Length: 193
Image (tube, rainbow, N blue to C red; front, side, top):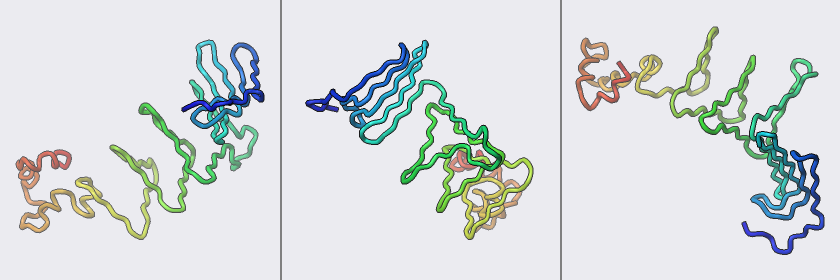
């Protein structure tokens, strides 16, 4: 980004508290979010950096090379809200880079949406309840897939659907071996039988 001409440096202040922490106020140099209102910068002996920045765009940045811990509610009662994260008009994104996992842990977890809840996975989705029951309740419940006991007992698995309008019954002896013998079906049926 090109620098602004005629930068006013008169209102800029710079303060340092020891060799590892400093603050810069009203720096007129442009960055991606405009000029900086304030920047707080600190580092450890191992050069792990902590940076906070508030810019003219209204964007606030907090960057830390190591762990960020937010703890609240030490003196709260049960049922109080200890930590609250609110997005007033936009979205809230939580992203883990480099194959990290996102874990949400509690005695109860409640997801509430005024409209939709979408669960998307590149591979597997596991719903596991150790004791109790799993309830799916809605006006319209659909299932689609090639294999599995839920698919077989509702819409029919691949073999059931392939032969549903033929004279071959799904429980015909040797049907699984017959389907496996057809080269075109091999890649589809490997996971079915």
